[in-house]
Length: 163
Image (cartoon, rainbow, N blue to C red; front, side, top):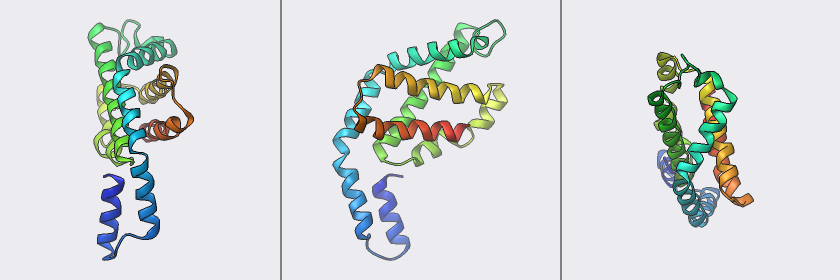
């Protein structure tokens, strides 16, 4: 749910107009629209580079994943792992766009632990992979402090939620 939808839904549930504070929050969200769009465009444009660097960082951190018998030991398994990186990076953009963590929660978190556990994928590896995505994003993109404060909370939320 976006910031706009949340404000409307909350006010409607309480049979009232949006409060001054809610309207100010909405104004701040709307003023940051250009910044949000630029951040998403940067992430999309650099997706392959971010994923490549994040994968390299993860496999340096956990070489056992690509060793014979590891979860990403074959080229097919490795490509599936990196495909998931793209999926998580896309989830981050949904959060940035909506100004809310709900899309990350509803689309990406619910059931993810159970899925990875059933596939024998270590949860710590997933947490580390999101940390590597975050680090790669910071390394590859020339982000201002404002951009970092806009983007990084969604990475942090995803890291906490998976862990």
